Image (cartoon, rainbow, N blue to C red; front, side, top):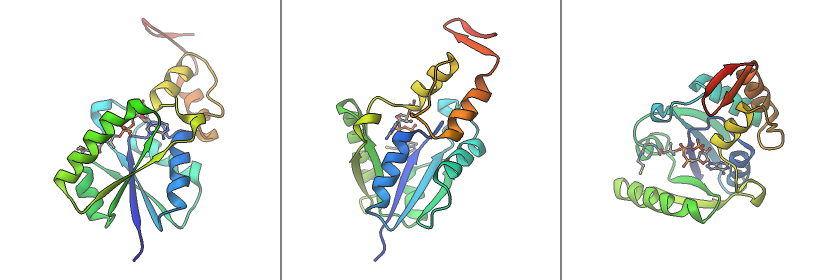
Amino acid sequence: MSKTAIYPGTFDPITNGHIDIIERGLAIFDRLIIAVALNPKKAPLFNIEERIEMIEESLGRHPKVSVETFSGLLVEEAERRKARVILRGLRAVSDFEYEFQMALMNRNLNDKIETVFMMTGEAYSYLSSSVVKEIASLGGTVDGLVPNIVSARLKETFAGTNLTNEGVFPA
Ligand code: COA
């Protein structure tokens, strides 16, 4: 039976840490669904179309990968897409408590769906989408931390602005 995993996240934006988990997942699963959460609670910098476009451009065409959006419960999305596995990356011990809670809650909601954790490559263990956005907003380089398309989009987004602790000011 073919093994399909769902890899959820806000991906605002996708980073090389996410790609590391996707590549590791692809070595194990027959199909990987990247499920992009609308997640309005997080007030994403990039809208859903932009986030999907950056993911698709970063990964290129891959027969085993599809990129989808979802709102609502992750386990319901997994069920709809016939994925029996939720793939999650662990970066550091600090991720554990939150992931533990989420995995158990998801199991409580649907015990046919299993969460599988993979360790993110150590080079990306300190990376998050927020850190990347903060560096880019302050004019720092994010090359090597994100795919080229993301780095270019961040430069465009923050061009002409200087974000300080007090807000966004024209350069
Ligand atoms: N490399 C680099 N960064 C990573 C990473 C990796 N391998 N894995 C996670 N991150 C970053 C993310 O970019 C994110 O950064 P940010 O907070 O700065 O945006 C941060 O770590 C947290 O990631 P994650 O826990 O995946 O949060 P998320 O917001 O990307 O996704 C959902 C959370 C969407 C998976 C979760 O909220 C969900 O399942 N929602 C659906 C509703 C639901 O079912 N709720 C019940 C669940 S119990």
